Length: 145
Image (cartoon, rainbow, N blue to C red; front, side, top):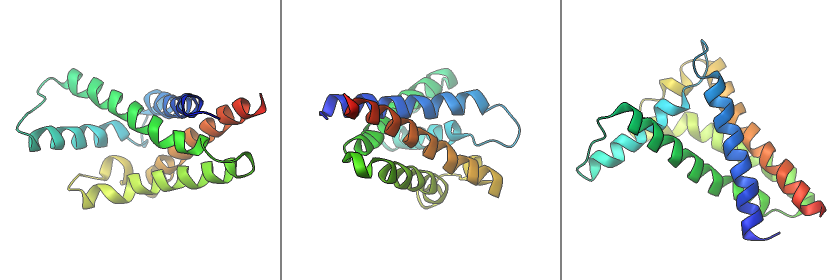
């Protein structure tokens, strides 16, 4: 499978993750991955002397960054051999989810939006595993052809 099809599969997983998150983010006791991304982006922009003052611009820029970075990350799943695809998907989904709940504090970010309760932590990990499994599904379809 080529790099383009890997990226397409990764984009499918990234889009699925974001659609799931966007669909549920306003429900009670769900992860707010967007808040974490906005913190990270704003911290980065401020490091370079800037500031994003418009909340709509911050949201859009964060969403674009999430799609791009998760597409690249998930495309690595699609590069797996067919026999290792699902194992790699689960492993990389778990790794991304656990990273999302454990790394923010070490990066100077507030982790509460994704790690306030054990239920929210589990959902955060589940979101990333879901995106990884969608990537594997699309990649598997490409590999069958």
